[in-house]
Length: 193
Ligand SMILES: CC(C)(COP(=O)(O)OP(=O)(O)OC[C@H]1O[C@@H](n2cnc3c(N)ncnc32)[C@H](O)[C@@H]1OP(=O)(O)O)[C@@H](O)C(=O)NCCC(=O)NCCS
Image (cartoon, rainbow, N blue to C red; front, side):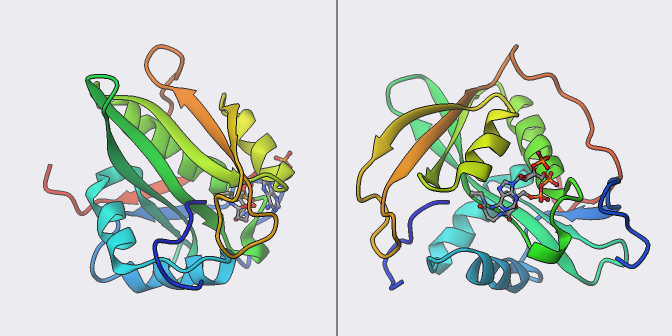
């Protein structure tokens, strides 16, 4: 979960199986769905610039809707950052959240899998990273299952939540990531290319 920029802050789906979902790119039409999800799940408030950055990350940012396409269940919001130390870019995962009643249906895993797929298709992007609050052990373990490694602990990274500390989780892209399509996902694309 990225820190905030400025402000104070299915009926026939079995949780033991994979919930069928529709993945959509972030657009002007569904931007408010993502904003609402983030407001409910994350204790920080994001500015309009956050959502503009997410849209610019292209297919790495995805919204997961239920199979009717009407209800947002979860989303991954990413931005691309130039890496000043290397000739390339990094994918930064700003938020990954699934509404509590829809957790454990592999929605989070498939959103992350898709973002890693999308990033790995761009040779310019060499790694993926994010910040997680140090007490969010389940989230840290979730990312470790995808090959992320814990790095630096940033004291007082968050301004208005306790604990304020974040750990950086990072994963290389390239040969170490094996691309596979996430199961049970229908894609509704909006990008021209
Ligand atoms: C992390 C999260 C996106 C996972 O979504 P999901 O759709 O439930 O994920 P999946 O079904 O693919 O995987 C479930 C796994 O996530 C783990 N998990 C990670 N963080 C969790 C959390 N905060 N609450 C509940 N489960 C969590 C569960 O332990 C479960 O592990 P298991 O496979 O060993 O049972 C979701 O739990 C969530 O929105 N958490 C709150 C926000 C958050 O902490 N985001 C991560 C930091 S940006």
